[in-house]
Image (tube, rainbow, N blue to C red; front, side, top):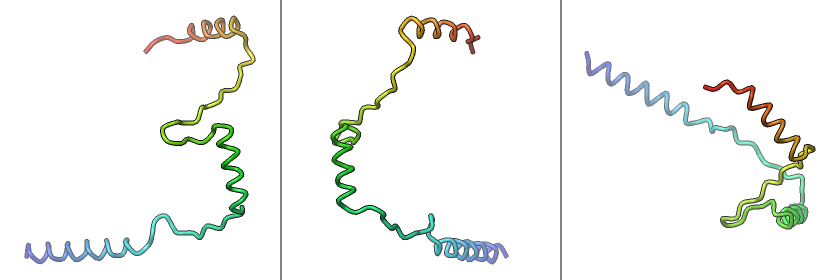
Length: 88
């Protein structure tokens, strides 16, 4: 009896895995490019000129937006924000 249950479990497990193996995940969709090779190469060269592309171990520099606050305003704002912190 025990052998029959083990055999049935193995057969059901094999059937379930075979059924799941048929459908690829994620679903394969055909890629259609809207740009020509020349356009892609031009964009790549432009990004490399602006140092937005990493090459070898050189990672791109993240350009931060300039703050509208001057140094004194930023310091006073950070002091005001630190007063809101009540600790962990």
